[in-house]
Length: 457
Image 1 (cartoon, helix red, strand yellow):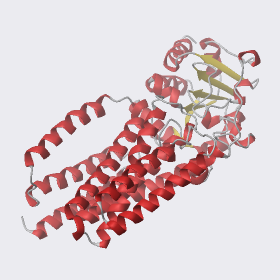
Image 2 (tube, rainbow, N blue to C red; image 1 turned 180 degrees about the horizontal axis):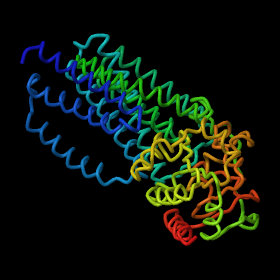
Image 3 (tube, one colour; image 1 turned 45 degrees about the vertical axis):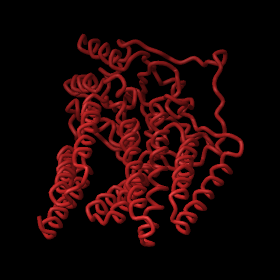
Image 4 (cartoon, one colour; image 1 turned 180 degrees about the vertical axis):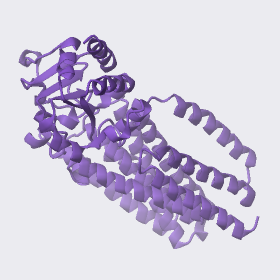
């Protein structure tokens, strides 16, 4: 295969990656965009075998087989509720792989490495290792294998600053000595910094950090592409880095807070006192029949989906409820918060699985002015994205985050398993509002009862 054909195929793959990102910008075209990106990745992977003719072919094929045997069943079996954790793991593996490739190439070239190659290697090792261990910590938090709250301790910020300074010093040592020992020290320090970097982040901020680490991984891939002199890697990594950065900024804007505050705000946040059982306040709970009556006589109902909907896999039941209400002449809409669930687009994907009409999904900026004309706001498993504390409680983890103004509706119905706070770990005063009715239980089971009661009218 000639170099011209190789470059042409690489260009086609790069265009496929760009079109994939364009497709992923809308739920309607996301599936085709995903397939386009997969096709581009497959194309360049196959291209390597025909043009580069890599050594150790058996080991490479074996690695592909093992990776496929792990990745395919994992991707097929993972629940939508666990998708953010899977993204975090895959992202961490990508960052770690880029760092390993850079280290191996650096050791292969030895003293013949150019200044540009050394700089790219240092950057890839630092950012790749940070992305690897940072992503592992975000996985542990989302999977609740460790506390989801920020992990802070006395002198924590100074320890983070000290480790960062040692990382910079080790990077200088690598640049001057170009030795393997210096590179090993740099790798270990970067791995430690990745853990310390993510520990202070908690609650609803974790998905934002995943997006940021994804951008880091993209940059490491681009840098390793420079070391390997592979244009496709540079293009793919740059696209991931740029898109990840844009997504991180958009998510931070949706939270109403700066990136720095999201990463290190826990060091200055005011602790939120936990409620004792003796201090429990009364709430108004109702039955499925009570909820059905409210919905049946409403003119406009807004459904607010959240992570509890995903956990219960209640998207099909909520669609059935919405269809029943629409048949009765009720105006039904779904209020979509940008960070509802645990990843951007989480609710859109779930509702698309149930074939909810796309035109019924209304973004926060558009739906908020209509809550004052809404008879019933039905909150299904959401908490933080409707919590008034975001506006009224300075110092709390979600303060400043734009929320869905469900409190402006004439009636609010919460479907909750218990009075346990949301992912951010703070109380929601809206639960104690006199116009709020709570229906306790699994969201799918509760909605099924409401649907049966509504059919009886």
